[in-house]
Length: 135
Image (cartoon, rainbow, N blue to C red):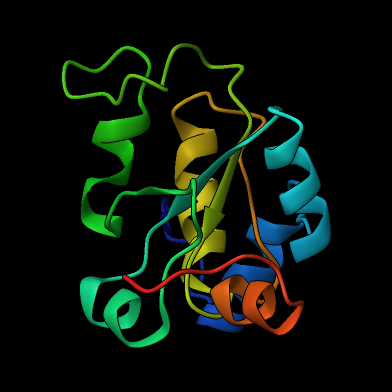
């Protein structure tokens, strides 16, 4: 993700396009079905004020963005109990689907190649009428 070796800088829109080209994103219904089937770990990276304002996804693990890599690295000493291997399917959820793309790319760099993010984020989940609860 970092610019190196004198490469020309890129804007955030181009960076997002490049990052998203390396994996397949999921929509809200697909993420829900994967989670419901036990095939995916939903990880909400939104900060507390957004969770308090809009609610949470029941069953999603809350890991604020600044802790994500430490909590999901299967080799890390601060990992979550769910971070059992590099094969875990992780669906990262932010508010609108932007920060989660960069977070998914960071998880790929740690070897979590099945990591993805939710297109449209929490707002798309809520708009699809999928389960939410107060924070």
